[in-house]
Length: 257
Image 1 (cartoon, rainbow, N blue to C red):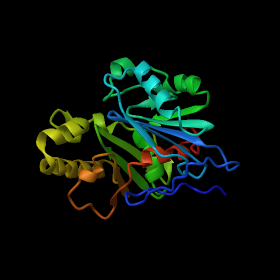
Image 2: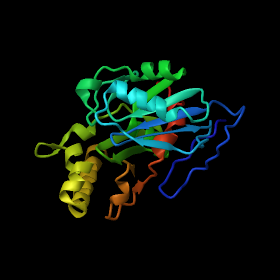
Image 3: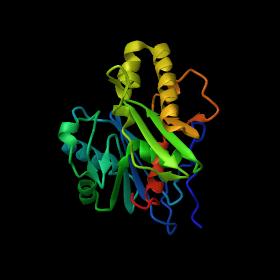
Image 4: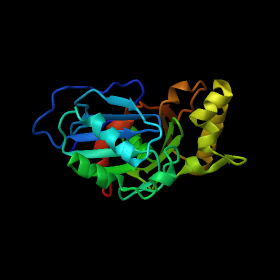
Protein backbone atom coordinates (compact mmCIF):
# COMPACT_ATOMS: atom_id res chain seq x y z
CA UNK A 1 0.00 0.00 0.00
CA UNK A 2 1.43 3.37 -1.04
CA UNK A 3 2.29 5.68 1.83
CA UNK A 4 0.45 8.98 1.69
CA UNK A 5 2.27 12.28 1.86
CA UNK A 6 1.49 13.69 5.34
CA UNK A 7 -0.35 16.96 5.72
CA UNK A 8 2.09 19.79 6.37
CA UNK A 9 1.65 22.28 9.18
CA UNK A 10 3.49 25.54 9.78
CA UNK A 11 5.46 23.94 12.62
CA UNK A 12 6.72 21.00 10.58
CA UNK A 13 9.97 21.11 8.61
CA UNK A 14 10.19 18.43 5.89
CA UNK A 15 13.21 16.15 5.96
CA UNK A 16 15.70 17.24 3.30
CA UNK A 17 18.39 15.07 1.78
CA UNK A 18 20.77 16.16 -0.96
CA UNK A 19 21.33 12.65 -2.37
CA UNK A 20 18.69 11.33 -4.78
CA UNK A 21 17.24 7.96 -3.75
CA UNK A 22 17.44 5.02 -6.13
CA UNK A 23 14.75 2.44 -6.82
CA UNK A 24 12.02 3.91 -4.63
CA UNK A 25 9.58 5.21 -7.19
CA UNK A 26 9.55 8.20 -9.51
CA UNK A 27 11.02 11.52 -8.44
CA UNK A 28 8.95 14.64 -9.01
CA UNK A 29 10.17 18.10 -9.89
CA UNK A 30 7.65 20.38 -8.16
CA UNK A 31 7.38 24.00 -9.28
CA UNK A 32 5.33 26.61 -7.44
CA UNK A 33 4.66 29.67 -9.60
CA UNK A 34 3.70 32.77 -7.64
CA UNK A 35 3.10 36.34 -8.67
CA UNK A 36 6.02 37.41 -6.48
CA UNK A 37 8.25 34.31 -6.42
CA UNK A 38 9.13 31.12 -8.33
CA UNK A 39 10.03 28.08 -6.19
CA UNK A 40 11.08 24.53 -6.99
CA UNK A 41 12.45 21.33 -5.48
CA UNK A 42 12.70 17.63 -6.30
CA UNK A 43 10.67 15.18 -4.19
CA UNK A 44 10.95 11.43 -3.72
CA UNK A 45 7.93 9.12 -4.07
CA UNK A 46 6.95 9.78 -0.45
CA UNK A 47 6.99 13.56 -0.85
CA UNK A 48 10.32 14.20 0.86
CA UNK A 49 12.57 16.89 -0.57
CA UNK A 50 15.75 15.61 -2.23
CA UNK A 51 17.19 19.11 -2.49
CA UNK A 52 16.87 22.47 -0.85
CA UNK A 53 14.06 24.53 -2.28
CA UNK A 54 15.35 27.07 -4.81
CA UNK A 55 13.63 30.41 -5.22
CA UNK A 56 13.87 33.53 -7.36
CA UNK A 57 11.67 36.59 -7.72
CA UNK A 58 9.07 36.45 -10.45
CA UNK A 59 10.26 38.67 -13.31
CA UNK A 60 8.19 41.75 -14.08
CA UNK A 61 6.68 41.87 -16.60
CA UNK A 62 6.35 38.10 -17.00
CA UNK A 63 4.79 36.99 -20.29
CA UNK A 64 4.91 33.24 -21.06
CA UNK A 65 8.27 33.25 -22.84
CA UNK A 66 9.94 35.01 -19.89
CA UNK A 67 8.31 32.65 -17.39
CA UNK A 68 9.38 29.52 -19.26
CA UNK A 69 12.96 30.74 -19.59
CA UNK A 70 13.08 31.64 -15.88
CA UNK A 71 11.72 28.25 -14.81
CA UNK A 72 14.17 26.31 -16.98
CA UNK A 73 17.05 28.29 -15.47
CA UNK A 74 15.65 27.89 -11.94
CA UNK A 75 15.59 24.08 -12.04
CA UNK A 76 18.76 23.51 -14.07
CA UNK A 77 20.91 22.47 -11.08
CA UNK A 78 18.33 20.40 -9.21
CA UNK A 79 18.61 16.58 -8.99
CA UNK A 80 17.26 14.41 -11.78
CA UNK A 81 13.53 13.67 -11.87
CA UNK A 82 11.11 11.68 -14.00
CA UNK A 83 8.08 13.98 -13.99
CA UNK A 84 7.03 17.55 -13.24
CA UNK A 85 4.20 19.13 -11.23
CA UNK A 86 3.45 22.83 -11.66
CA UNK A 87 1.19 25.05 -9.58
CA UNK A 88 0.05 28.17 -11.45
CA UNK A 89 -1.69 31.28 -10.02
CA UNK A 90 -4.78 31.25 -12.20
CA UNK A 91 -7.40 29.02 -13.76
CA UNK A 92 -5.92 26.17 -15.78
CA UNK A 93 -7.52 23.27 -17.61
CA UNK A 94 -5.89 20.33 -19.40
CA UNK A 95 -2.47 21.97 -19.29
CA UNK A 96 -3.66 25.29 -20.68
CA UNK A 97 -3.89 28.64 -18.91
CA UNK A 98 -7.33 30.26 -18.97
CA UNK A 99 -6.73 33.15 -16.55
CA UNK A 100 -3.72 34.72 -14.86
CA UNK A 101 -5.06 37.63 -12.76
CA UNK A 102 -1.73 38.64 -11.23
CA UNK A 103 0.49 37.89 -14.23
CA UNK A 104 -1.64 39.25 -17.08
CA UNK A 105 -4.54 37.24 -18.49
CA UNK A 106 -4.35 39.00 -21.88
CA UNK A 107 -0.85 37.61 -22.48
CA UNK A 108 -1.40 34.23 -20.82
CA UNK A 109 -4.88 33.20 -21.97
CA UNK A 110 -4.74 30.03 -24.05
CA UNK A 111 -1.03 29.38 -23.43
CA UNK A 112 -0.27 25.64 -23.24
CA UNK A 113 2.20 25.86 -20.39
CA UNK A 114 2.29 22.12 -19.65
CA UNK A 115 3.15 21.22 -23.24
CA UNK A 116 5.83 23.88 -23.55
CA UNK A 117 7.51 22.91 -20.28
CA UNK A 118 7.33 19.22 -21.21
CA UNK A 119 9.26 19.97 -24.40
CA UNK A 120 11.81 22.18 -22.66
CA UNK A 121 12.39 19.86 -19.70
CA UNK A 122 12.04 16.58 -21.58
CA UNK A 123 9.56 14.93 -19.19
CA UNK A 124 5.79 14.76 -18.61
CA UNK A 125 4.22 17.77 -16.91
CA UNK A 126 0.99 18.17 -14.97
CA UNK A 127 -0.35 21.67 -14.42
CA UNK A 128 -2.84 22.71 -11.75
CA UNK A 129 -3.87 25.85 -9.91
CA UNK A 130 -1.27 26.74 -7.26
CA UNK A 131 -3.75 26.66 -4.37
CA UNK A 132 -4.96 23.25 -5.56
CA UNK A 133 -1.39 21.93 -5.44
CA UNK A 134 -0.81 23.38 -1.98
CA UNK A 135 -4.09 21.88 -0.87
CA UNK A 136 -3.06 18.41 -1.97
CA UNK A 137 -0.35 18.50 0.70
CA UNK A 138 -2.38 20.36 3.33
CA UNK A 139 -5.72 18.52 3.26
CA UNK A 140 -6.36 15.68 5.70
CA UNK A 141 -8.82 13.63 3.65
CA UNK A 142 -11.98 13.89 5.75
CA UNK A 143 -15.12 15.85 4.95
CA UNK A 144 -15.22 19.14 3.09
CA UNK A 145 -11.89 20.97 3.32
CA UNK A 146 -11.16 24.45 2.04
CA UNK A 147 -7.64 25.73 1.43
CA UNK A 148 -7.08 29.49 1.30
CA UNK A 149 -3.74 30.99 0.33
CA UNK A 150 -2.96 34.60 1.26
CA UNK A 151 -0.30 36.14 -0.94
CA UNK A 152 -0.20 38.63 -3.78
CA UNK A 153 -3.77 37.51 -4.35
CA UNK A 154 -6.10 35.00 -2.71
CA UNK A 155 -6.07 31.37 -3.79
CA UNK A 156 -8.62 28.70 -2.91
CA UNK A 157 -8.91 24.95 -3.30
CA UNK A 158 -11.77 22.67 -2.32
CA UNK A 159 -11.68 18.98 -1.35
CA UNK A 160 -14.25 16.38 -0.33
CA UNK A 161 -13.02 13.26 1.48
CA UNK A 162 -9.57 13.82 -0.01
CA UNK A 163 -10.77 14.31 -3.60
CA UNK A 164 -9.88 17.55 -5.36
CA UNK A 165 -13.05 19.21 -6.62
CA UNK A 166 -13.30 21.45 -9.72
CA UNK A 167 -11.49 24.71 -9.16
CA UNK A 168 -13.52 27.79 -8.22
CA UNK A 169 -12.06 31.26 -8.77
CA UNK A 170 -13.46 32.67 -5.55
CA UNK A 171 -10.72 35.31 -5.54
CA UNK A 172 -12.29 37.02 -8.55
CA UNK A 173 -15.77 37.21 -7.02
CA UNK A 174 -17.00 40.41 -5.34
CA UNK A 175 -17.02 40.53 -1.55
CA UNK A 176 -17.52 44.22 -0.73
CA UNK A 177 -19.20 46.65 -3.12
CA UNK A 178 -17.26 46.20 -6.37
CA UNK A 179 -14.08 44.79 -4.76
CA UNK A 180 -13.06 41.17 -5.34
CA UNK A 181 -11.41 39.01 -2.68
CA UNK A 182 -8.07 39.70 -4.40
CA UNK A 183 -8.60 43.45 -4.12
CA UNK A 184 -10.10 43.26 -0.63
CA UNK A 185 -7.47 41.13 1.18
CA UNK A 186 -4.64 40.76 -1.33
CA UNK A 187 -1.14 42.01 -0.56
CA UNK A 188 -1.73 45.44 -2.12
CA UNK A 189 -4.68 45.98 0.23
CA UNK A 190 -2.63 44.88 3.25
CA UNK A 191 0.07 47.41 2.45
CA UNK A 192 -2.46 50.15 1.83
CA UNK A 193 -4.73 49.77 4.87
CA UNK A 194 -2.32 48.36 7.47
CA UNK A 195 -2.14 45.14 9.47
CA UNK A 196 -5.02 45.74 11.89
CA UNK A 197 -7.65 46.59 9.30
CA UNK A 198 -6.35 43.89 6.94
CA UNK A 199 -6.80 41.26 9.68
CA UNK A 200 -10.36 42.45 10.23
CA UNK A 201 -11.02 42.04 6.52
CA UNK A 202 -9.48 38.56 6.42
CA UNK A 203 -11.64 37.43 9.33
CA UNK A 204 -14.72 38.77 7.52
CA UNK A 205 -13.69 37.07 4.28
CA UNK A 206 -13.16 33.70 5.99
CA UNK A 207 -16.58 33.97 7.59
CA UNK A 208 -18.07 34.65 4.15
CA UNK A 209 -16.38 31.52 2.82
CA UNK A 210 -17.77 29.51 5.72
CA UNK A 211 -21.29 30.60 4.78
CA UNK A 212 -20.64 29.83 1.10
CA UNK A 213 -19.01 26.40 1.53
CA UNK A 214 -19.84 25.22 5.08
CA UNK A 215 -16.42 23.56 5.32
CA UNK A 216 -15.41 21.03 7.96
CA UNK A 217 -11.80 22.24 7.97
CA UNK A 218 -10.05 25.36 6.71
CA UNK A 219 -6.32 25.34 5.94
CA UNK A 220 -4.67 28.76 5.56
CA UNK A 221 -1.38 29.08 3.68
CA UNK A 222 0.56 31.55 1.58
CA UNK A 223 3.17 34.12 2.49
CA UNK A 224 0.75 36.36 4.39
CA UNK A 225 -0.69 33.63 6.61
CA UNK A 226 2.03 34.45 9.16
CA UNK A 227 0.64 37.98 9.42
CA UNK A 228 -2.68 36.89 10.91
CA UNK A 229 -3.15 38.18 14.45
CA UNK A 230 -6.67 37.06 15.36
CA UNK A 231 -7.45 33.75 17.04
CA UNK A 232 -8.48 31.11 14.55
CA UNK A 233 -11.63 29.07 15.05
CA UNK A 234 -11.23 25.45 16.15
CA UNK A 235 -11.71 24.18 12.60
CA UNK A 236 -9.04 26.44 11.07
CA UNK A 237 -5.26 26.06 10.97
CA UNK A 238 -2.21 27.61 9.33
CA UNK A 239 -0.15 25.35 7.06
CA UNK A 240 3.41 25.68 5.84
CA UNK A 241 4.08 27.61 2.66
CA UNK A 242 6.22 24.60 1.63
CA UNK A 243 2.98 22.75 0.90
CA UNK A 244 2.95 24.51 -2.47
CA UNK A 245 5.92 22.31 -3.37
CA UNK A 246 5.04 19.15 -1.43
CA UNK A 247 1.67 18.76 -3.15
CA UNK A 248 3.56 17.96 -6.34
CA UNK A 249 3.70 14.23 -5.59
CA UNK A 250 0.01 13.92 -4.74
CA UNK A 251 -0.87 15.63 -8.01
CA UNK A 252 0.32 12.48 -9.79
CA UNK A 253 -1.94 10.33 -7.60
CA UNK A 254 -5.10 12.08 -8.77
CA UNK A 255 -7.03 10.47 -11.60
CA UNK A 256 -7.18 13.44 -13.91
CA UNK A 257 -4.19 15.55 -12.83
